[in-house]
Length: 181
Image 1 (cartoon, rainbow, N blue to C red):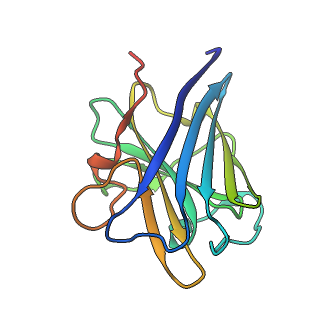
Image 2: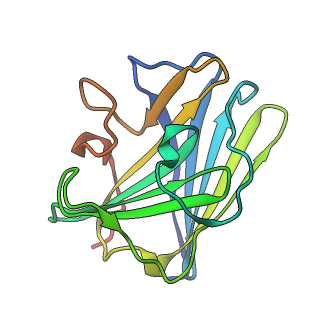
């Protein structure tokens, strides 16, 4: 693959869990060679809880605070993959056999590389993922994030949300198709 892009996508906060100070979140998707680069850009990070540097490595329950996520579901299959990326540089990868069922750690030959950088208005979380970690195409894709603010406000961001409580595993959140045949 020479290089391709699924573009930049604006995530929306779950209507029942709005942010207090965060103004927006978008994700840029770019593939080059053997790598997928995701760039999550949070506008308004002044009061965002940013997990401290912990170094690269697998960790569970990253979603309990600020965390960025990717879901991939191969076309026609009930199973899917969940990736979690923390600003601390910790990550997680899980395979699911079906909706919230049969969860197990996904083996990866190379660790995802993540780095968070903050500027005056933006927090940027870059993630580089070896494409060998990805399932066969085509996919339905879910991009999401949990953002925790210093006062305890937690907002849930995704391309789309199902009715009811936040649930990134729900099929409605897999709102982007990669278009591969």
